[in-house]
Image 1 (cartoon, rainbow, N blue to C red):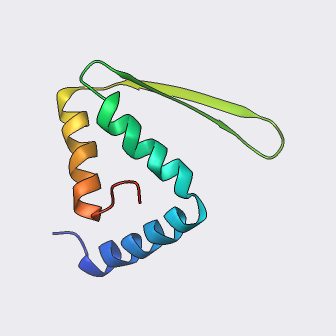
Image 2 (cartoon, rainbow, N blue to C red):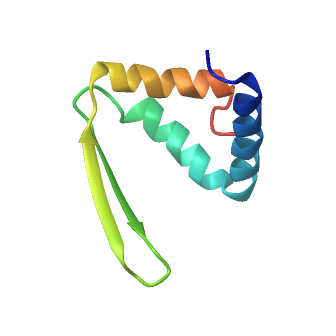
Length: 80
């Protein structure tokens, strides 16, 4: 079993992240509900402060979609 205190700490960090980036989290909730289906491609690019970009993607399986939805329910957060 995972450490429950670590999960509580992660939940607090998540709440702080949502507080700093509320529009981003609403966007993530929206795309999870409307666009993340089996076969969808999750495509991510991260650009650092120097302008260097790293890109990656993943084609979602049914298990991936179920996991992402379960994670949202576990955290009790739906794009507040």
